[in-house]
Image 1: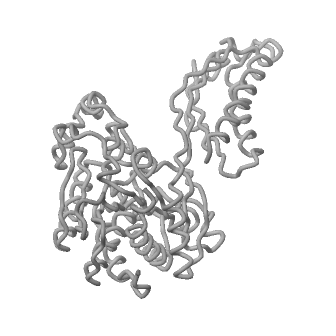
Image 2: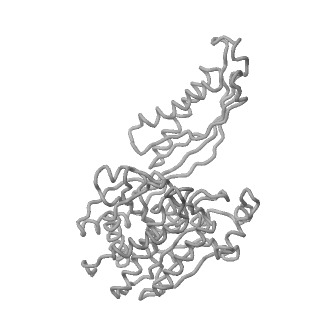
Image 3: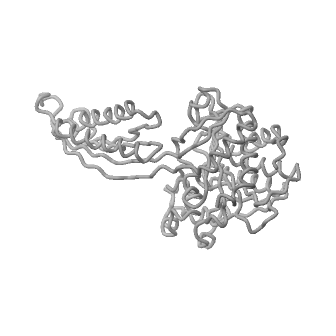
Amino acid sequence: MIDTSLRINRDRLERSIHELAVYGRNGQGGLDRTAFTPAELEARVWIRAALADGGFGVRVDGAANIWGRRDGDHLELPAIVCGSHIDTVPNGGKYDGALGVLMALEILRTLNDKGILTRHPFELVSFSAEEPNPFGLSTFGSRAVTGKLTLEQIKGAKNVEGKRLTEALEEAGGSLIGLGHGPLSKEEVGVFVEVHIEQGKRLIGRSVPVGVVTAITGIYREEVTVRGEANHAGTTLMEDRCDALTAAAEMILAAEDICRTFPAAEVVGTVGQLRLLPNAPNIIPAEVSFLAEFRGETEAQLQAVVNEWSDRLQLLGLRRRAAVTRKLILNQAPSPMDRTVIEAMERMAGMLEIPSLRLGSMAGHDAAHLASVTRSGMLFVPSIDGKSHCPEEESRMDDIEHAANVLLYTLLDLDIILDAKG
């Protein structure tokens, strides 16, 4: 039976949040802690020291992921793992990723404080380079240990200064030799749970302190090139023009319309990059390339959006007399979270009388990659005003405490039921 009086140490967790936020702090109030930079390497030292001070086993794998371990009563059982990442976007906030790692640390500390002996080993993981980084491999650490990256990709990655990723890995304690271990398996990791800020307004808007993630978004991204005809901007009558930019503008608005009118609010679309040729004030644009991205919680949603998008592009290209070519950049399927983990989260939140809400994650996370090798789940903490990736990123300590206690009991519940579920 689980002791229902257990609670994490709120003050200690809050101190940890502030202590880690020292590393990479800039003059704008944000954090510059891109993966493998001096600030991020210093933050790694802090994490390793905190684990060692707590008496936990500490190791760094080939991808420079940091692991902390608290043994269970049955060492042969797979580990129950929770964590996230500590790197940030430029001028980012102190909660994105870091909260999940610090909450995992607090869980291990709480178990020690209370002298609780678990059946499974409990582990913390801080994944390397989750955010976009100069080496061009985001969610690097989780992809590397789940077989999503080849050694050739890792060996070939380098930044604009020519520094190789392999060199950065060695500086952080990783190595190519360590990556030869192969992908993680269910025999090593029985379940992975990631806590993250929502980075949206759904929880805060409903005053719900805990989000139970049902799936992590699928992402479809393509480059669209629209070719018209360059001509003089003054002497070419409107009826004689084949303007690539105005054609592309209609297509971009079509992407917005498709998503705005889609019956599921979780479907979103963005055009975030555009290139124009010849890009001169007195020449009708001859060619426009843009990146279109669509996200959805289910494969059916994404497929419906892409089908409608294809039809609209064809119709607009014909009407505008413009040639349209498309190049697939990314087609990442949604990652459903494990039902056993979802139900455990909801059951424990209910036991603690903490309101929760099921929702999909519209951002990518390390948990999506872990879902390909083991049971995976996510808890969301509300983001004030939905802000993230900025210095104004903030979450309420009351909500953080609620999520941490739900996480604590979820992991203890999984420790009891996991093997029975197979």
